[in-house]
Length: 357
Image 1: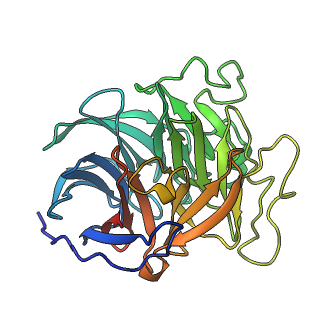
Image 2 (image 1 turned 60 degrees about the vertical axis):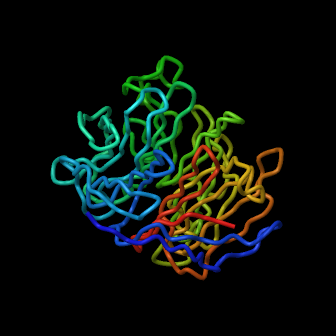
């Protein structure tokens, strides 16, 4: 166990939004790439460390406790323990995505476990995807829920052609029942050329995924190549283009990726980032604690080290962008909004913060 005092003097590092400046309060430090956050209650946050550990953090004291070490985790390259979420369907149940060892590399897998407040037990794989490559890259992955289903994202695993190959789960957003089965109303259940779990495809590496319960809309943010990060409004059965369409360029030169930026039959992004911000997470904020953020998309930026705030109009078009906490110089990995409207975020430096006024 490790104790890190809670910094009560908030860091005045914020950009002023229309109402008043936002600040941050450090909860704890010393975490090892805190990839996923799951808010339990006012005292407790579950955190995945990418090396394959689930920790419990006391939000009042900053105390950390290791609860569980993932079996069969491939903590190399971009792999390891990924997202974590409390089940909205079953009490004391959590879901975790992670890179699971397979044939010398790994695939993105979804597991569940029982969490009783002090222990994590009954670990089991719910769904192991067909997404094997030998690249060690682009595992995704975030988890979100609608009223009766679970969604999680998988990157193209560093193989571009996977984006349009519907016989692999790589480069897709999947939709499952809470038990890991295929919902009967998934878009491709009668199409033998597409794996039944696929909800949408043509994605490069979606590391942000959020279902907005108010509007019943599913949002995603994904890494582009050199430029071309995308915010997408995810539609049932839609193709999001990668690598046929992209706004990015090749890493090795000023050559555009793909055939075009847009193409008939392919969904265009709501917003494109050039240069890339390298997004690590996405939420749509609903809450009264920060009215200046209500209804806006918040994304953690890794490369450009800030929280990115995007304003949407009534047609779900991106009409404004703001950047928070750039002066911190930290790669923002995950953002978690509590039912009461509090906002927490983790950084690759190993810190966990709460946003305050």
